[in-house]
Amino acid sequence: MKRLRTADDVIRALGGIEVVLQLTGANAKQAWNWTGRFGAFPANTYVCLMRALNRRGYTAPARLWNMKGISTDEAA
Image 1 (cartoon, rainbow, N blue to C red):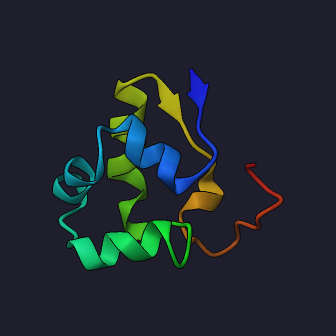
Image 2 (tube, rainbow, N blue to C red):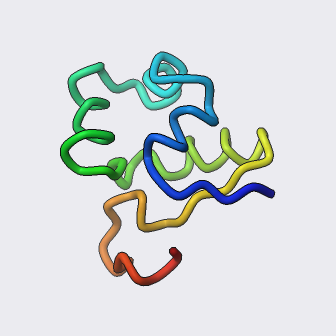
């Protein structure tokens, strides 16, 4: 399984921003913040995005989802 490192990597692996918007139910303004301002996804998108990544043979560190208890050093 290929390990992705950034939110941009996740979006590319899933087929682009439009696919990610459909998977998460988010709008383009929200998604811009994920890659630009914050570099992380909201915690409530973890399950749907990880399932989609796993189906495509990818994985990503949990730190890419702003979850409490996960530091940038952990799950890198």
